[in-house]
Length: 71
Image (tube, rainbow, N blue to C red; front, side, top):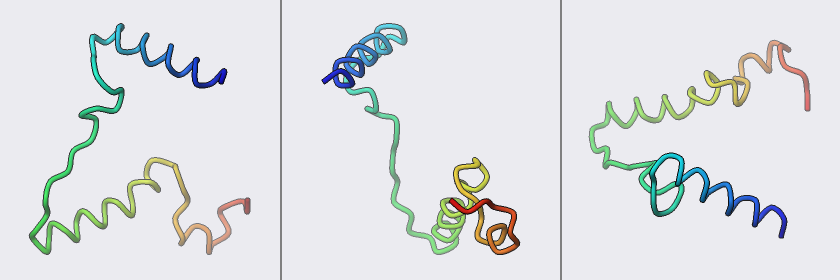
């Protein structure tokens, strides 16, 4: 119950500070249809590589070369 109350208070504070209303994640993401083959391949490549660039995960090649500590 502590975390629930904390998150509710944080959300209220954040929305007041930034002049927002509604859900905290409302309008944060959007989606568009991708029908072109080149565009869909580009989007798939971006989705695959972006977490590596952001440091959220290590690429498979680096794991194979031993540059990663096992978890």
